[in-house]
Image (cartoon, rainbow, N blue to C red; front, side, top):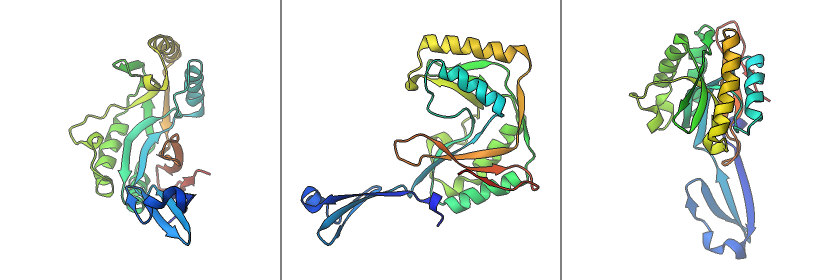
Length: 229
C-alpha cells in the first residue's frame, strides 16, 4: 500500500487518562494497550476523494483574485467532475480513472457566464459536451470501488460549474453580487475557454482540513502521469 493511500496519525495518552478506552474501537478510532500506555489511533482507511478539472493559469489567477477580494473559498479554482465520495478500493478506483483518461482526448471547455445555486453558491457556468460524456463514463465505471452515496445517484443530472464562492465560507449576498459583476465583466470581454489536459484527484490529509491536490492524471496515451509533491 502506497503512503498516500492511507494517512494514519496517532496520539498517545497516559493510561490514567484513557483507562476506560483500553482495547476499544469506534469507527476510525481504535484504542489499544502498549505496556503501561494507552494508544489512540486515528485512521482514514475509508478515504474521501473527489475529481476535478483545473483551469489554465490565467483563468485560475483571475478567479482567485476575485475570490480573495471578498473572502476565502477554502478550495482552489476547479470544476468538479466527480463529487466527494468514500473510496473503498483506491488502487482499483485510481486505475480505472487512469485507464479512462488514457483513452480520452483533451477536453474543450467554455465559461460563458455566472449563475447561482439559490443563495448558497455563486459559480461560473461551464459548457462542454465532452466533459459531460466523461462524467457519465467515470461515474459508471468507478462505482464498484466506492460507497454508494446520495450524490452519486444515477438520476442526478450533472451540472458542471466553477465555484466562485460559497455562503458557508463566509461570503455574503452583497459579496455574491460584487463577485458576479467582476466575473461577468471578465467573461463578457472575450470568449473565455480553455482545453483541459488532465484531471486532478483531491483528498483531505486531515479529517477537518482542506481539500488538496493528490494526483494529476493526464488525458491521452502520449502523456505521463504527474504526481503532486
